[in-house]
Length: 637
Image 1 (tube, rainbow, N blue to C red):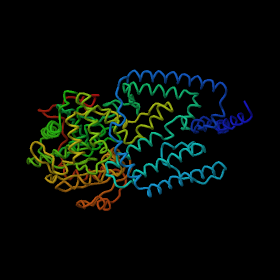
Image 2: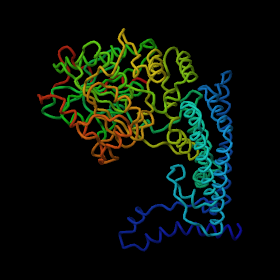
Image 3: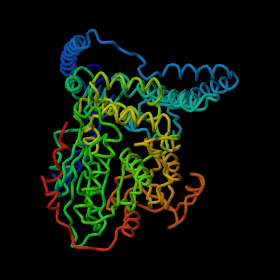
Image 4: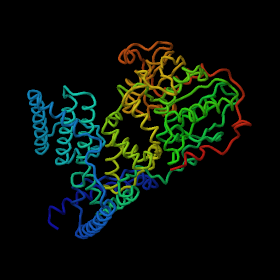
């Protein structure tokens, strides 16, 4: 071992010894506490390289050889499973939109040259900073909030710092190039932006072993064991997906529905073709006379509303003195593949309302619709208004759209090419949209968080994913019947028929202007699925009073935000204030408040929930309890 190598190893070992010396010189009886409480030193990549012995290098070589053998076996297995399969390179028809956008860029040479100049001047600045850092004259650099580059190695190591800054500059330039193009319609820009973002995210240096200092550090520290663990994780996920990569996002063995998620006490009081109805056990001596019925989206399981004791909306609503009922949608099998939107109205919304009213012995009900469940609820209410049915006393909508002109990121999957792709997927599966299709779609919308972060953690670092209840729920997707899903995509996302009074259900043209029911509309500032501007357009369509609020965070965390968590913030209009003409005017009129919006909703809802009555027992003579919550439908995979 040469002198330089010995010195590097000596310096690295000093960092380890310093912690031990601190423990040795502590007061008697305190050494163990110091040793236990002191943070373990995180050696840099260069430190670790300086500590390697010949034995370490031999062990690393042996593990890399095993890695190569395992990799070849996986490749061979994949080749056998995918033999003869047709690979569609552009199933969603992105290429024509990208060609249109690039054509517009080329036809505006002055603007393109200006942007090109920005590109090169940005790189000149990056190289200037790199040179200063090399010669020890480093100027303070702007910290990045990008979680991919949070490890200090990305900033302290000159090589990786240069790589990081170059990548981030390139990514921002490419994304801005597409975002600022003129002369193309919104769909072309959005689809091209989505495609370029996917490519840019995929080519991040953090996603590759040789350009990720954290992964390299882990490889050296474990003598290659991390890569072998990563290869095992990759093989496991390919096996889960039957040849297609099904990334494990959480330790699913850590959760069991009904044991540590979906645990609020209650009873299943009705089992229908499309849903089980759960009535939750009251925790107050008295409850409001008018019951509260939740309609969650059928894309996922209902227990997003009931994850844990400390964040369960259902448990909280029960504690507020409401008689809470929740629809638990079935995970459909092929026998239900022909069920459509009207079936989900009749055998879903109508049936649940009728059973709940019978059990409670009342003639009015307050309803809640979350996301697509809210779209179904609003459509049913429009039909009820046409037919003189006034049983819905009030309605609350969480992150739910009725007008789809300014719909969120899912709109990029609803043009002709994407619609045909989804139709083909359903037909190939025999009439049901496989749950993995929707899971992959939602994951791609946040690919850095829901795809690439796990590629790094599971495969490059060889770590097992941590238990996370939200990701456990996120992976518990459901199938969707052909007629239901295609009707929804075509009439709402593609044609906006409902908002523009062209949707006909059972011979009635629906209009939300007919709905005079009091409405509470929740939206979230960072929701990319149901943007608040889109929700505002829908709120303006109702014919009665609408209270629309804005919550912090996004599509899930903006809704599920327990008051005890003291997280985020929300913005409220004045009580009784009508909706202004534009979303900008509405947003400007809001006042900011800390924490959860749930208490504001509770005040609004209690004023519309009738007198207090004795707490109700589960079920009735006509609808006796069947089993304990969370029931059986939620368990179907």
